[in-house]
Length: 109
Image 1 (cartoon, rainbow, N blue to C red):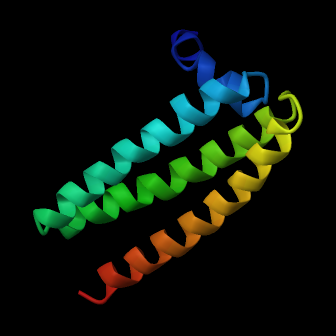
Image 2: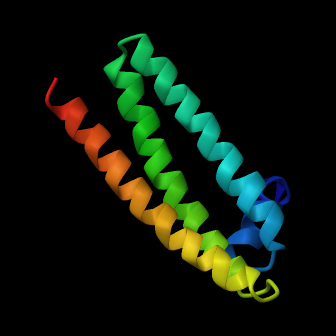
């Protein structure tokens, strides 16, 4: 019950019931930036274990956020529904490429 109350915005976003703007910014871009900063910090500290942990968290979180944004785009007004979905596709491709190459770099150390 308490977890449901704490994670209510995330649950609403996952179900596609939340407004698109706050989902994109508050549950997509901002948390992703925090994870990117954490990865860069670990990179500069030469800490491959933290890099791997943050990279894995980034991939998992991005997957969740992309699904939530896609679902919430259905409630947005045109043309924002289409713009959000096109940007979601681009974001997914970016995550796959960047995370894939960073993962390869970690594996070759």
